[in-house]
Image 1 (cartoon, helix red, strand yellow):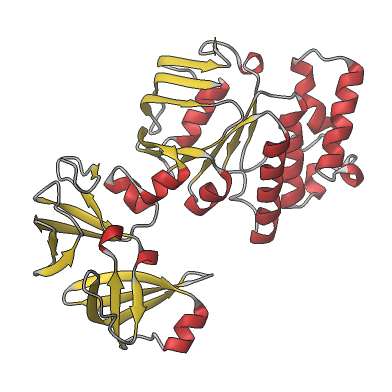
Image 2 (cartoon, rainbow, N blue to C red):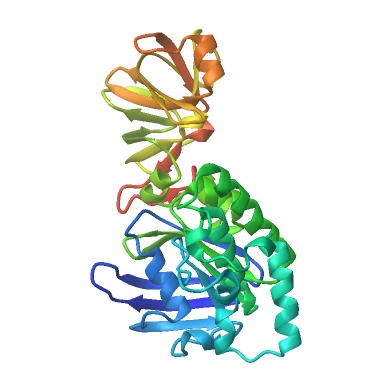
Length: 359
């Protein structure tokens, strides 16, 4: 459906370089990365809103690189909605029809379906000024879908909403995607959001693609140190390797379960793979260490617990219930443990991920 070849564009401070990836028809594809990574620039290049310096863009097998936006079969929804303030909900939704030729009966049917689908019937004569954030987002989605695009581009569509509206719109997006043949490409910096919505995705860093693949592969098998950090592997350490051992800090030895493919590099461990207990977990093949809780950080739905082991800090996550029942408070003595299989190894040249046991 979408194929991007060697794409480059240069704007002041927001450049993208050598972008290559494909999106299948009907996929929900997620473009991830931190603020300033170039995600929106790439989205606007696909939409035809900014010029391409080098490379090609194909949509449904057609080269659209030099085509104007209205000729690409693409709809776009921004995080701040970009509705016309002087137009009613009806006028905003119908606006895109000025650039396309449809039968009147067909457009009326499409309009009625969208009004029903997004529960906008009571709002059709209102101006955007009189709508809530969730209502504005639903109108913006209806406007983008009114022209029946083959591709829908979504630029952080949930970031401006409060948690309740965000959940509603997330379910709405998933439902619309499942009930239509439209290919979705969504930009987000929220990896949890990406996991809930996407089939596949790509991580962008400083205008370049770091990794492309299935969401679970990006989450469980990051290919670079940047991706590991982005997906929440907060325990990242320089390491030396000796057989099946990794030595970190001032000599702390970890069992990695097999012979390392490199002698020097880094390791990464997800916080949710580290278990904290009050009693030592005694098992031969597990990594278990005693430590002191240095900090407990409230992260909303869970707590991040920092445990000092020698001169190193390990970060784990626990629920509020476990935190209170186990009395995991600052200064408490605890044991932490993790399986060798959860340790990810990165080679030193560009800190690319290596599967264990492979050179």
